Amino acid sequence: MTDDLNPADVVVAEYEHLLRMISASSAERTRVGPLYFLALGAFFVAMFGAQSGQLASQTIALGMSGLFLLLSAYATLIFVQLIRMRQIWFTNSSALNQLKATVVENFPAVGLQEALAAEEVTFPKKFEPWSLSFLSALQTGLVGTALIGAAVLLLGLALAGKIEVWMWVIALFVAFIYFADLIIIYWWILRERD
Image (tube, rainbow, N blue to C red; front, top):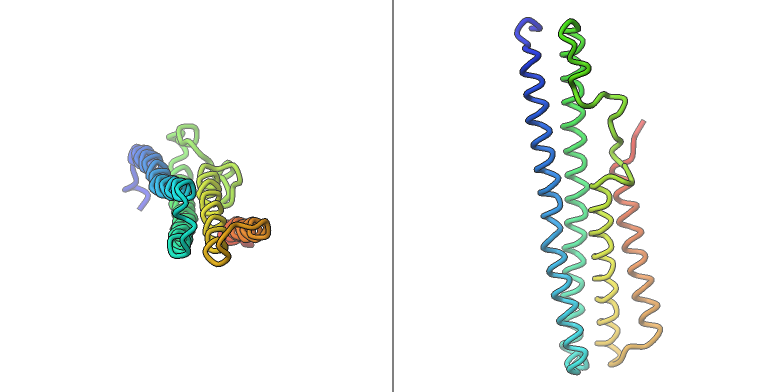
């Protein structure tokens, strides 16, 4: 079997894999873009509705609360997709490292160890707080946090007819719990298991 392996093919395969990884990370960032536009649009609608007095209507405030709740669910879905993309990236990279180790071990005279970009020792963890994946997930979580806070605030407006201080406290509390849950979920799913 080792007679059929061509070390040059491994180098080409690694190069192609790195190109796919770059485009996948770009695709990861583009997945988050529509959420930002939707969230920004919803905030503008709420701001203009508040200035024109239309949010005083219970029906409109309740509808806007539902919209913000739906957008926060969308943010959660994107957040979970980012976790899944990190898992896929890690699985593919681990397989590539295993392939590289096999080729280096079977063809030591070729000197591929120096030509290959990453070694098993320098391979990042699944949960890496400063990785692009985590920062994208953090960004998405913050947008979702603002959306769920706005949903709770607008629900309070729909029920009480005006915004009170206690509504802000509840909205901030719900937003904090939402954000903390997302970060815990990210860590829990991507943690290193022994």
